Length: 240
Image (cartoon, rainbow, N blue to C red; front, side, top):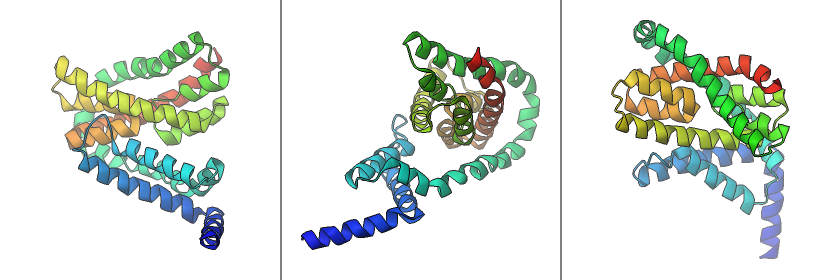
């Protein structure tokens, strides 16, 4: 038995030195998370990405894989975040006639909402005595991951901490947008989609596409514009 364990550990060490292990674990967690999501009845409070993240974290802990080694191996998948975000331009193009009709409300609401999404996190963190590194990690929490990683590195924050805040923000934003849509009530799918993309980045956008293609297109628009606006304004706000 000890010899078998030793060989297994040796094989694990070899795989850990290549991207194969990290990519395999990530894809396995992704498919398992989607299967569990459907199995649990597709609850809004527990999206597939949360299930996948918890499963992946558990496996990494059990196998005693250093997070830095995992992250280095998974860089190949991280690179794909950029093209995946750009690909959202297709539904934007398909719904361009709706977007043109609402350019004035979008122009008015986006700067206010995107600024508030970053500023309130900074204010709360500062009031609770957070360090500059923590503040820099929390500030881009409403921005899609490819842009948020660049902002966090520019501000001197922690990417792992930022990714945790990103995950929590996406889930909570999706829940609250759905809740307030029922309470207010808001029926316009364009408004719902834009709010989901602006506040919930990729997780909110995935939820918007479940509502309708129009909601998904406006979520893509909200997510993209929020990322661009935040990348331009946040470094200035953070220094102030």
